[in-house]
Length: 194
Image (cartoon, rainbow, N blue to C red; front, side, top):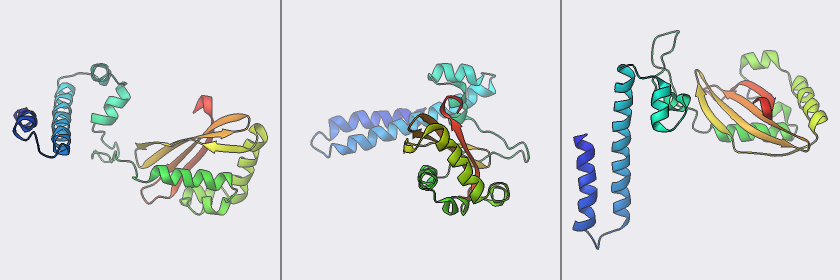
């Protein structure tokens, strides 16, 4: 808390002490204060959890869902090892998802399956992938566009949900990527159930 107070004091003083200075320095100082405040929030959330507060109660105070509060401040432990889990999604997962969706829409089956991990390769051939896409097009018409992917870490994979817009129906492409960027799962889900 003292560190945060020191940063706030420095920000307020800089407005008075350097009125003719670079105005962007105030932005840097404000960002520094925000970062320190976030550190304080993280500490008090952990203290609240240790005191027995539920993620629901913490989420209510933060104005977010309990899941959002947990994802931001929780420290999930891997039930297999007891060690903290990696909660950071692949940095380029959204780009990977867009490339995969665009390859699907263009019928580049071999480019999609080339990214499959061993389990996916065993379970879904190029022909089966093409047949599945043809079934979706048969139900809802031609592919028109896609939206921006949502990205989240789930255990050992990064999961992307990309909205798909076809002529007569909307879907979500849910694609899971391993840390080596290979595809561990690929589902095309009707939009209302995704």
